[in-house]
Every structure is written in C-alpha cells, then in structure tokens.
Picture (cartoon, rainbow, N blue to C red):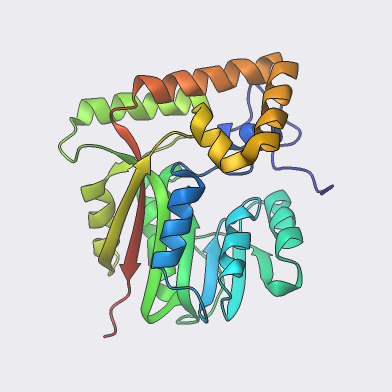
Length: 264
C-alpha cells in the first residue's frame, strides 16, 4: 500500500501511540488482540447482516468482518488517510466513507450490526455517549452493537487509582484515553437504550512478546523489531508505553461487549 498513514507528518516522539505502532508495522491495534476480536465478531452473528464499522482504521477488522460474508459492509472513518487505507482493503466488497462516529450521516435503522473497536476508550464521556446514541439510531430493532475496548478492573477500583491510570496512559500514548470498568461500560450502554447480552475479556497484552507474535506472526514481529531498533525516538516511546501497561497490568484488561437494540 502506498497511502500514507495518519499523522505521517509527525515525528515519533509526538505521534499518538496507536499510529506510532502502525508506523512501526503493527497491524493489530486492539487491546485484546486478534483472539478477542474473532470471538466478538462470532458472537455478533455477521453472516447475512448489514454491517457498519465505526473507525475501521487500517482495515484489519474490516477484513475479518468480510470473511464472515455479511450482506453489506460500510466503514465510517474520521481520518482521511485511515479511510483511504481501509478502502484499499475493502475494495469492491463494501464502502468506506469519511465521517464522525457520532454523526455518520447514515439512515436510521439501516444496519443489523455496528462494530467499534478501540475507539470509545479514546473519547470523553459525553462523546462516548454520543457515539453510542448514533449506533443505536443506525441499528434496526434487534440489531447488535459490538465493541472491543480497554477496561479497568475490578468494578470497585478506587477513583483515585482510575485517575492515576488514565493520566499515565495519556502521557505514554499521547491520547486522552479513558477506559472504564465492566460495570461502567455496561451502565453507559444501558443508558443509551441497549440491553447487554454478552461480556468477554482478554488480557491487555498489546506489547507483550507472546501477544505480538500471535497477532503479527513471525515475519511481522521481525519487521516491527527491525523498525523499532532503527528509530531511537520510537524505541523510547514503545518502551514507555510498555512500562505503563506493565505498571498497571493488574488493573488493565480488554473487554468485548455485545449489546442489543430492543425490538420495541
């Protein structure tokens, strides 16, 4: 692919963490890795469904969605460069448009499934609620909303600890990440009118060697290592992100939720 990555003009010291990892060759940028994505997509019952993916990014999940033979696929991506990347992956099998996840411009009740991965975590609480409201509007009655996000545990985690973790994440990944506990994610979806059907978890092991190898394969992992070694600023950022994840590993997890829009 020749389409530039998002934030391609920024140096490695200041680019948002997930796009830095993409620049280094990492394709899977989800907190629970490929395994949790696959389980979530299976639970969402995609075959024969009209699917909308919010923030498809580089198109990796779009490819997994299309393998399940939906009736239709549409991606809505806010970043022009990422939209172009996703469109290259999707090709003639679907459509990718540029737009805000909270204001897609899609018709009401036009989708059976809405998928969103690793994007609600990066939003403020009001914008989380706005995106959830848009997913609810776009879905037909009985439709499913599938999300894969970063979470905090346990539900009783002290608010001061939550604040500390969120500040540490913001410093290391250069994005104002606001992960929630299972109870908080459930409450947010329920407040948006959804009924939570399934909740699944996986370790938040984004930068652990075993997860990288599982997600990227041997050649992909070798490519990432080579790129990290060649870029000192990127290496420092990756080590800082990994240190943050390790320091808070007991409280960080990946969560996947399937929520349903009621029939009436």
